[in-house]
Amino acid sequence: MYELKTEQLIPLPLDEVFAFFADASNLSRITPPWLDFRIVSETPVRMEEGRLIDYRLKVHGFPLRWQSEITVWDPPHRFVDEQRKGPYKVWHHTHRFEKAGNGTRVIDEVRYDVPGGALIHKLIVKRDIAKIFEYRVRALEELFGAPETGTKSA
Image (cartoon, rainbow, N blue to C red):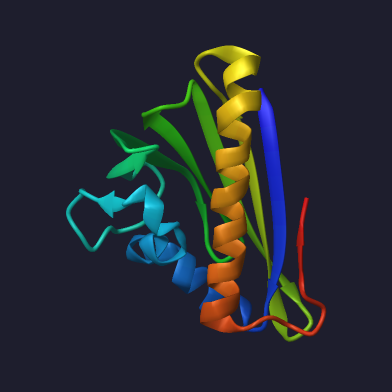
């Protein structure tokens, strides 16, 4: 099992930041364009525990379908999406939101496993996931600005 964690400060109140992430249509705004990411579920998606969301995307030019389930819904502090169908053996993504001064700390924690094992992870998947989350940090900075303290990726 592999893990990735990022933290980012957004200079907006907790409720506003959570509302942005709670709108599934905003996911395409913070997903790299090279993934050609599309929600195929009926929109708008009502976010709640048990909600299944279907997507289409391309990874290295190959079209993929992905289905995630919202398994935890705790506004405005966190939610969890888990892959039900898709390219990973396991994908468990916890989104946490914490008040941080006048802004909000956004924490993404992803636990995942890949078909093909350690070699595929090392050669392809680890780098791809890092690029996706680096893009996400930059996109959120462009949308909301960066606080004086900047961002941190772990």
